[in-house]
Every structure is written in structure tokens, then in C-alpha cells.
Image (cartoon, rainbow, N blue to C red; front, side):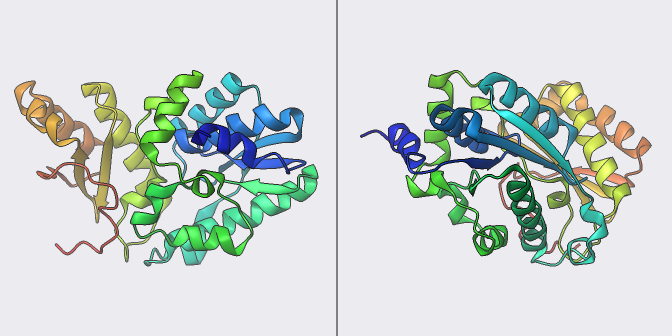
Length: 267
């Protein structure tokens, strides 16, 4: 039996399900499978907790439109959670713990029995305290249970026609701020604006603007770094990012790598 069939079968003994939908490819596949098996007894829920980018929120709406699954956006403000705002190395735990509580509350209101997310096998290779928070609150991960990797997820999503199949991985905007530096609305706003500016200017899709006490450290795919210089993008980027509040701008010569802020930067 192929893994997609195993994923569909995962829902066989479920009567109803809430899918935590982030706007990325992983939870999109879970939402698709849930809807295929359970139809109107499945519900996608996206949390707009003020550190989710507008791009991710818009993606979640597009995904649910394509699938046909019911979609609810819940709103709360993570910046009111001091444990999250202080930004120590358990920030992701506090984020996912609060999210899980909200999802449990929503599932009860909607009378849904099971809550699932898009955690997959590749997520286990990095420091992810948020996964512990999800488990603590009873959130299930069908992609993990059927041992699906990121590449396999993308392949399946392409085959079933989900346009999100090649969307670059993303994470909450707070992940651009090193541990030990407080998360503020001002910093989140300039990070999101900075990434939008660079995407619109260059056409690059995988971009991180790390906010290192006001210094913008830009990470892009390493093969795109020469393009910044060849097409004279860099000067424009520096000028525009300084206009929105960054004190200076530098390019990470090593390019983007997932988990780059699982350390405290020392400058």
C-alpha cells in the first residue's frame, strides 16, 4: 500500500476531525486527506496569532478553497503572552502550547473529536520544542504516523493538484528574532515588510530577514546570492530596508538553512 493510501486510511476510524492548517504544504495534505475521507465532518482551522504573516494567512484561504473543506480563522495575540515574548529557547513550546489550547477549545465548540496537524518526519531532525507542546495537548500527526517526508508530501500534493505543492517552507515571523531578544510588534512588522520588499524586487521566494537588534541579516538560497550583485539588487534592498527601520543590512554568505536561529547569535 502506498503512503498516500495509508494517510487516507488513517482517518478510517475517525468520526470527525479538526485540521490545524498553517498555510503550508504539509497541513494542506492533511486537510485534503481529511476532507476526502470525512467530508463535512472535517474542519480546517487557521490561527491568526499576530506572528503569522499575511502571506501564510492568504495561502490557508487558497488551500481550503481548492480542497473545499470548511475553514475557520481564530484570532488571538501571542504578544500578550510574556512567556512567548521573552523569547527564550522554549519560545516555540509556549507558542504551540497556547495554540493547542485554542484548538482544543475550538474542537469542543465545533463538536469535533480529533485534532491533527502537519508535523512530518523531517521535523524530527531539528530542535522543535513545539512538537512536545502539541503532544501534551493531544494533537495527532498523521504524516508522522505514516512516515511521510517533506519531499514525499510535495510529490503527493503535486499529483493531487494542490497548487501549494512547491511553496517554500515558512515559519512564524518570531523565528527571525534570535533567542534572548524580545519579540515586539514593531520588529515583526519590519521583518514582514522587509521580506515582502525583497520578494517583490527580486522574485525570490525563499527569503528570511533576521532581525539582530535592528540589523537585517538576509538569508536566501545560496545560488541566488550572486544574482543580488549581478542585477544590482543589493543597493536597492539596503536603501528600502533602512527606510523601514533597520539600522544596517548584511547578506548571509552561507545562504538560507532551516533552523539557523536555533542558536543565540553573538555579534
